[in-house]
Structures are given as structure tokens and as C-alpha cells.
Length: 213
Image: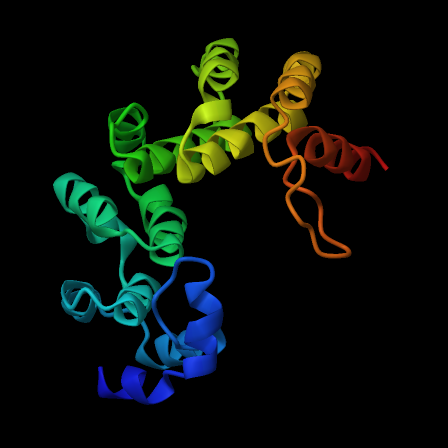
């Protein structure tokens, strides 16, 4: 914790706070520290228990994802309120867990929007990697009905799911494009030069173009 404190930079924190995060540690330096520590599951649990965001990010880099139990991961997602900690927890840990599918189903309709966004993120992962058994038409129904007025975090995750359906499943691409065009979610989101817009129709068409080029 002392070493993390020494790495904290007020300028980094100021930038992070604009995105809803509350730590000031450069992520490159954090990853270098994690590389030095290597995998240490009990240290990871101890760092997570501090509730400090930088410590939790480090914990997620040095943990063993498959060592966490179902209830433990559920509690962690409900505690992970800042965007970066939540994102790393879902992507670096939950997606690698043997409990991922069970948690996806449990979180998908959770009344807590941050938890629901984790369910949608896991669903987007399945859309691209293991779509067998998913009701893609049903997912599009839910997205069409709920995405426009959803809170920011689940809205982003729903939008990602919509885009991935359109990118990876040609038979559903026209409908995914139509939903995106009509709902206009993230249509005006500022995008840096060289980056692809998160607006689903633009995202879908660009990824398909690159793949088929």
C-alpha cells in the first residue's frame, strides 16, 4: 500500500476522476508492479479487502481468476463501483471463471444497473465466442425495448452486445443496424481520430469492412 501511495500522481487522478475513477496511479506502472509480484492469490484478496481502487486494480492483475468462488465474485461485482475496477474485474477475472455463465444469467436482469452491466458484458462475450444456445433474436428484442432509456453503464454494455451481434452474425446484421439507427444511442459520442465510433451502425460496418477487406 505504501508503494502504491508513492506511485499516486495528482495529475493522473484528475484525469481519472473525469471518467468516474478515484485513483492516481499510472496503469503502466501498476502493471509493472504486478509483473514483479507475479501471481499471489492471498495478497490479491488482501489488496481487494482494502477497498482502495489502485489496490483493487493490482489485486485483479495478480490474482488467480479460477480461485474465486461464485458468491465471492458476486460480492466483488457488487462492491466494484468505479468503472475501471468494474471493467477489469469482469474482463480479467469473471470471464475466466468457471462460474461465468451462472453469474451471467444471475446478473443479466439484476436491479442494480452496475451489476446488470456485468451480465450484459458477459453476454456480449458469449455472442462472439460461444453463441450456441443464445437466443439472439430475443436479445435484440430486449435491446430494442430497453437500451434507449437504460442507465449509462448497462446502456454501454447493451450497445456492445448489439454491435457484436451485428458484426459476428450476418443473419441478424440488418436488424442490428436498424435498431442502432433508430435508437441513435451514442450517435454523437466524441471519437478520437483513428478510433472507431461506438455508435453501433458505424461500429458494425467498420468491423465487417476490416474483416472482409
